[in-house]
Every structure is written in C-alpha cells, then in structure tokens.
Image: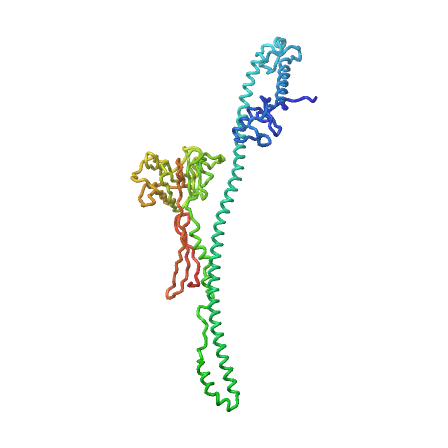
Length: 495
C-alpha cells in the first residue's frame, strides 16, 4: 500500500487534519465546521472547491476518512513521542535554547552544550508554536480577507447578470410602447389617407357618370338630326319643324370644369410628417431632471423601474460595491459640476425623510467625511443641515407635499422652497469646487418621487422685414440644467 502524506488528510478549507469530516455529493470532503462557516458566508449550500450545489443541508459523515485521520494522528503522535537522539539513542526530552534543537539528557551534560539553557520539549514547543502562530496571523488574516473579496466579486458577477437581464427587459418594454405608438399612428394616418382617397374617388365617379349620361343624350340628338339632314328634300321639309324643336329642347350646357380640391392633399399627409409625429409623441414620453442611481442605493431601499422614486423595503442582497450607501438609507441622483439645475421632490405623507445635495466623493460607509446640505422632516419637524452649520430648525407651519430644490453651482447657491406655493424655506451659500449629487433618504414605506418635467415643443415663426414668409423654426424642450433648449432650422414652407 502506498504511503500517505499529511496533505492527504488535510481539509481543503482550513488546510488542517480533518475534524469530523463530511462527504458531499460531488465527492469532496470537508470538516463539518469549515463547511458550515462557508455556507453561512455564502448563503448558498455549494461546494467550496467545485461550486456544486448540495441537495442536503446536513451532509453525511465520512466515517472512513475519519478513521484514517485518527489512525494517522495516532501514528504521528507515537512517532513524535518516540523520537530518539541520533547520538545517544535517548528520548529527546529537552530543547537547547542556544542551538535551537531538541536534545536528550545525555546531550545536556555534554561539552557541546556546556553553559547552555534548556527547556522541556513540551514547553519549548508551546512557546515556539505561539511565536509561529503570531507570525502566521497576518497571513491568515490576509487569506480571510482575500476569501471575503472573492465572495464579493462572485456576488458582483451574479448581480451584473441580474442587472443586465432586468435592464434589457425594461429597454424592450420602453421600445415596445414606442413601436406600438408608431404603429397606431401609422395606421391612423393611413386610414385618413384611404378615407380621403375613397371620398374623392367617389366624387369623381359620380361626376363622370353624370357626364356620361349627358354625352349619351346629346349623342342621340346629334345622330338623329344628322340623319334628318341627309334625308330627301320632301322628307326633310316635312320633318324640319320637329327636328328644330328636338335640337332646341336639348340646350347646350357649359363645358364642364375640373373641380378644385379634387386631388389628394399630399401636403396635409406628408408635410412635416416626422415633426408632427414627434410633437404628438411628447404626450407618451416623460423627462426627469434627476435620475436615481440604483448602484448607490442602500440595501433597504427599493427604487421604481423608471429610477425616479424610492421607498424603504426589505433588505436586498446587493454587492458591496464602493458606490453603495451602507450607513445612510440614501440613494444618489445624477451629479452636477456646473450650471443651474432644479428638481421637484414629492414627499407626500412620508413622515421620515431627508433630501438635498452631497459631494460625490463623500463617504458612503459612514457619516464622517461627508459634505452635504439637506432638508429633513421627522417627528421633530423640519430642519436644515450643512457640514459647516450643523442642524437648525426652519419655521414651516404646514406639512409640505412637494419640495423644489434649485442649485446654482456657478454662483454657489442652493435653495429649498415649497413647490406648490413657491414659499421660500431655506438657502445655503457655498463655493462649490467639486461635483455634487442630489440625494434622497427615507425610513418610510411611502415613496419619495422626483417629479417629471413637462415636455413641450414650440414653433417660433420669425419674419424678415418687409416679408411675410416665415424664416425660422424653433423647438423648445426642457433639458437637464432646468432651462429650455432651442433648436433652430430654416423653414421654407408656410404649411
């Protein structure tokens, strides 16, 4: 039988001799305690080596391996206690502190160890074990930290897949709505075109039928009169009076004229077609001046699918990424490092919230080191806070429903007001030198919501002096800075 080394009896998790080994379905064995600790950290019953998920939370004991390990330890212990001095064949009971080696009682009295210091082997072994353990501690701690980071990386990789699938679904849903709108709009315009075609085709058909009847009647009169003209003199004269009466009874109508507006109004159907559809689409889309970042949200916060509202919910399993808040029940919005910006937050009947600005580089794992300016509400009423001036109460007599936040980054001003009455609440002044981000914090199940801005399209008709022809088309839509963007283009048609 081949000899076995100590490594054959070591647990892959703790790298020590197996203690109460258990056997997984994937054939890997571990100490029961090591496996339970791994499963507790991972929150999944999987093999630490091959990642195979165990179907049982209480795997069976590996009795054969347990017996082998006990036998190995017994043989190892006997070998250690029975180790003899190579010079005197005496048991090694002492440890020479000067030579740092085990010796026997005869070696102690030998000249080579004269005036040396000795310790019993068990005492010396214990002291050296403690020294080695102390030296090993940093490596063990480092190994634990690496295992922890590996676990975080694994969770992050899983979360990336979840994020990608969820985002893909939401993108498809948004485009599905847009496609449906365009299909319905196309069908409506095609129906209008077919209706106009049918109406005008029917009108032309009726006109042509009436004209055909007139032509047939007149043709009969002309043909009969022409036959009379070719008759003999006596017959012609006898029927002359009747022929004249027949011609005079068929009065000549005016020549038919082409109808005005008889053709398809292509200009109505095609003129500014894409612009008109785009203008109508504004009722379908919404614009949020601030978009919340789910990668910064505290695990207890739940964001809406459109990333505009947040509420408190059950703790979610989220990766421990650096951007995520773990101290505050907060989430960040898109940041600003210049310009003027404003956004409205609907707080409604939420009784425990905070909102405002925080420096992008602020701490996410603790309050210390964060630079922020905020307005909050709780049982103690309304307060404002800044890193420099701390908390102070503000005199608000009625409960606010919607808060307007206005940031003038360039001029160093942050203003809070009542969005319903425009009443001023508080103004902070600060010289901003870095990017700042809106944040929302809530400890309530009622949501805080960033209200959407109304999307508008305006056509501005500019005229040159002495001319009635429009020159410029201007589209006006809200943008992130809270102002209106103007997009100009030449206009060559007055439709």
